Image 1 (cartoon, helix red, strand yellow):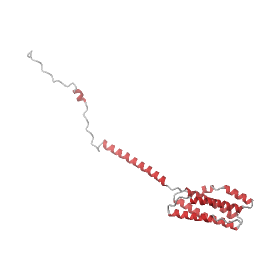
Image 2 (image 1 turned 90 degrees about the horizontal axis):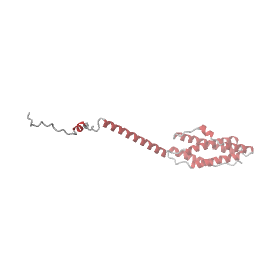
Image 3 (image 1 turned 135 degrees about the vertical axis):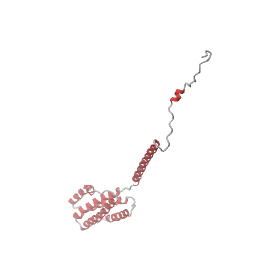
Length: 206
């Protein structure tokens, strides 16, 4: 080897090669609609459908609540009819004059028919009618007034007074009923209104 000849030079390496070469190759993006992307789309779709269903159900419940008809007036009428029938029945048995007996009997008959129609209507619109609960709502104050009047020989006068008061309250409730929307309801309201006028024609006890 010639002492004057230089040794062969090694190729110069880039000092950053080890960093560049150590990097993980980029993964190819997954095609949309396959693999994980498809699962994600299904999950999003399911969540969207569930949310829409919840919103629809809430909206329907609110709409139904807002448009649901109030039948409380008819339930009150049923309670009033029950008490009128009860007092009229007492009068038909205990009144001393024929005219008052006949009046009490007429009131009982008319109101009993009304009660049957009212109860049938309420059942038709899915409103529960509890006869036992109605019977328990009797006004015992009326019984005491009649008992006192009977002892004072004023039973007929007090009977007429009580029935008249009950009928007046009943008439006011009938007039305040909501506007009828069905053929059945219209027929019932007409009957109640017409009969209320007949019930108001009280006789004298003489």
